[in-house]
Image (cartoon, rainbow, N blue to C red; front, side, top):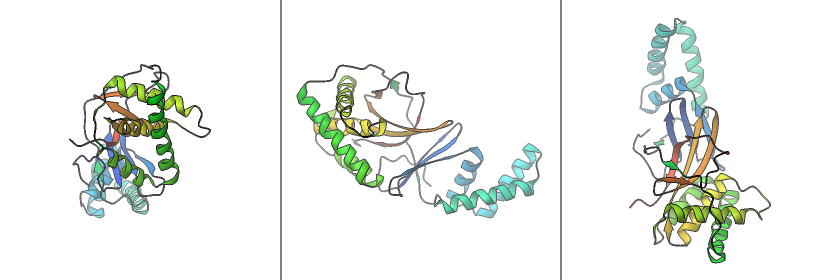
Length: 245
């Protein structure tokens, strides 16, 4: 495990630690999966990922918990042994990268009117590409394509520009017969921005308690396109894709 923040890179497992445990995005399966851990599982997982032998990690945690909670060390050991087995079977004892730590971004709830038809064409192209990637490709390929889009020429989008693009994508999505929720809309906005010479940040995040995941777009360190009645913040960023310079 590495605490070094990553953009997207070649890693396939991304994570963030919160006050309620850890949220992990495993991009190795075909579709990608979210996994959530409580405090104890997170502590054991962190110890194992840092190279601590299983027996040593379980013994140390068992003794400490037994002293703190007046419970049997043997019982704690059995529970932790079962947890370590679950982690191994889930293939989570593999290199993972921690999300970058950033100040809590401002959330802009404005809902501007969609742009001119020409801009809406770019929004339609971005959404179409997002839908193709998310429906037909593994998540790791989608992340790779999003990372490739950051190399297109352009300048950082302003908050207003990103909001307008998100509104255009949402407008186009109304005629789409299938699902077009936060993941599709945010990636569509990110790609539409790249196609129009603008750059923004695509973020996948989660909330361990209650367990939920979300995707959004940021511009000028502001989260755009959020409906005030739809989401409870804050979500913790787990993976972000943006231009590195």
